[in-house]
Length: 219
Image 1 (tube, rainbow, N blue to C red):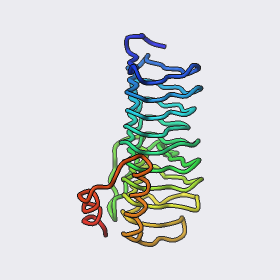
Image 2 (cartoon, one colour):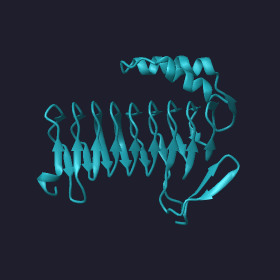
Image 3 (cartoon, helix red, strand yellow):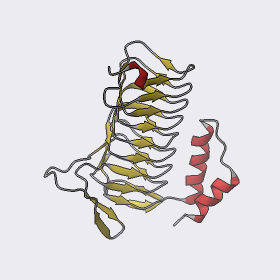
Image 4 (cartoon, rainbow, N blue to C red):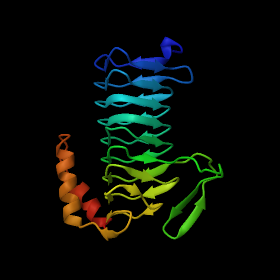
């Protein structure tokens, strides 16, 4: 749908049959070696990054970085790259950092029931965003377990591991290992070890400089 000139598909990208691309409201750009599997829908303006795989997803007005795995529903989001959302669930009006893994049925809220502006909590401070729709901010290397629910305007740091399902807190500092009932500090060496395994699965080695940055920001 829309004008064909607003759809850009790299020569070595693979768009299967039974894919819907809607460029009515903005262009759609599918970059090199991206794969769009059947029964996916992409609504522009949207960008699908290099080597990203879209699997039975509905992507609306979003930018998906390189080497991501996307399924389910994504609306008005930025995925930085190397992130996995490879199962059903909704992520909307959100910013997702690199190397994030969202477990099956992970879903966020991006609209309050009373339609008032979303407030964002950072530490002990609460800020009014002035926005009616605002999802979540998730830092690099954070992981959610299956059935995770993320509240409106949530801020989740890097190297957070939330498991056991249920509602996450509105604010989670970096390097936390938690459930809906309890929280502990994520062991630094274990966090780095897991990150190395995850990165190697995408044929990316962790440089010493990258590791040093992680260590410097450990709290």
